[in-house]
Structure formats: structure tokens, C-alpha cells
Length: 320
Image 1 (spheres, helix red, strand yellow):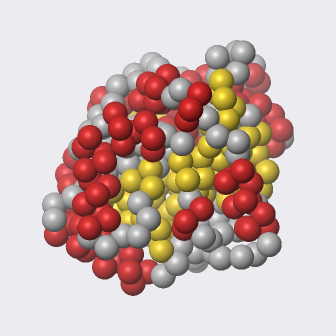
Image 2: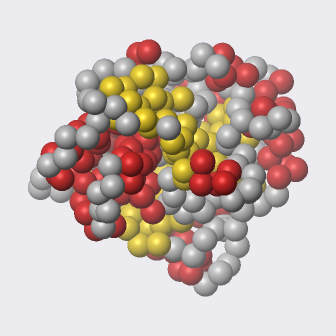
Image 3: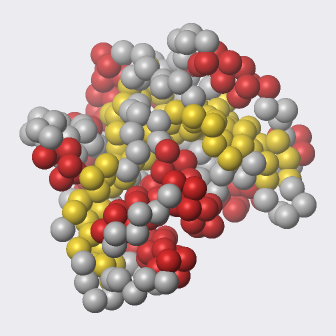
């Protein structure tokens, strides 16, 4: 059995430029991996099977199974796998957990089945699964264009600490709903994102004031609870509170750990579902390889004394 760590992401900038003729939208976004992660386990088997610590995620349409089947069809292989997901990234929150799981499945099964897939071939398969799946093959800091599948690596963002806040809100078909709620007045030129790209390429510190997300105009207007929680976070001391992807999760970002930890403790004492995490430069990681080198696993793997990184309410809800 091999175990893989599959990372979440945030959007440092996310601009929607307009609607395309094919029905999709053109976006310009800067993506960043963070050390909050799911754990995927793979074992050789006769056929394909999938289990999860959250039973509701088990089904034929799960993106992990779709990724495995796509890899079989693309290569003509009949190999199987028993796949288990330990879900830790909040579901449907704008953190890209499902897409990250799919990307890791492609990488892990390609290795387990001895397929020797090229990076280009994996990228093509990832694009067929979803617009943001290719990013998780790359990880780190990257500019995404088109539907999100055209990627340009950017200089690594120095470590920043984040407080993630998860509103108690489930939005069915969230991504399609949020895109459908956009009107031409919410479309932007991409200038904010390009400004941040130039700043990162010049090696300047991240400017929190440049962090921008088109979907905030929709989310804060359409979902009063999200806006109310954003205001609570501001009142607790955060200078900039931004939406994760299409939401509804929010985040505040800091260059140092101490102020992030202070905000985390304050919000947790108020009963909010919060995470303390940090930015990392990482693509899908095989934990056995990390442990074999004698390195410490990334902080999002359970370690003694590290339990504070995931809020108690989330741990309870995820069945841990």
C-alpha cells in the first residue's frame, strides 16, 4: 500500500474576464498550495474500488474513480486498485480538494501500474477531468489562464500563514451557481492579477491589498451568512479577509505565524470552524518516500502536538 498526501489551494487573485462561446468563462487567477491535505491510499487489486471515511462521498461519479477509469481507458490497461480517501479538506468550500484528489490519483496510479506517463499526457488527462485539476499536478505558486488549465509557474511565494474560516453553509452545485450568478458588471480586465504576477516575479513581498476575488461580489451579496462571518473576522482583528475560490470558505493571510495564531485562537474561542495552515511549494507527495528519507512529514499529516491545525468542529464533522 502507498499513501499520498493531496493538498488544498487558495486563490491569491481570481478574476473572471468574461463568458466564452463554449459556455465556459475565461479566468485569470494565481493559485497557491497550502499544507491542509487529504490522504489517499492505494493498493493493487483485481478491479477498481473506492472507500472513504465520509460514506456520502462514495459513489460511481466520485472524481477519484473517474480519474482512475480515465487513466485505464487512455492507456488500455486493465489494472485495478483499492483506493481509500481520508477526507480532511472541507468539501465544497473553494479549496479544490476534489480536484487535488483526482490529480493525485493520476500520479499515484500511473506509478503503481508502471505506466511511465509523460507530464504532458498527465496534464491532458487532468484537463479532461476539470479546469483546475492540472494545477495540482504542478503545485506551488502558479498563474492559471483560459478555463484555468493554462498554467505558468511563478516564483515560490515565501511561507505565509493562513487562518481559514468555514461558514456552516452547504451550497448545492456551488461552482456552476456562482458562475451563473455573475453578470458583465462583475467581469474585470485581469489587471489586478497581472500586477500581482509582476510583483511576485520581481521578488517583492506579497501585498495583501492586491488580493482580489471576483466571486466576492456575488457571495457576499447572495449569502448573508458568509458576509456576516467575514465581518466577524474583521472585528476579531483581520485586516484582509478574502474568499477561497468560489467559496464559501474565507481566509486571512499573514507573513508571520504569531498574528495568524492569535486570530485563530480568537475565532476558535468564538465557536467558529477554523483552520491554521500555511503556504507550501508542493505537488502530490508519496508519504512512504518522505518517511524513507527520514524527513518529517508536512504539518498537515497528524503529528503529536499539531492537532491545533484543524478546528475541532471540522474534525467532529469529518468523523475523525
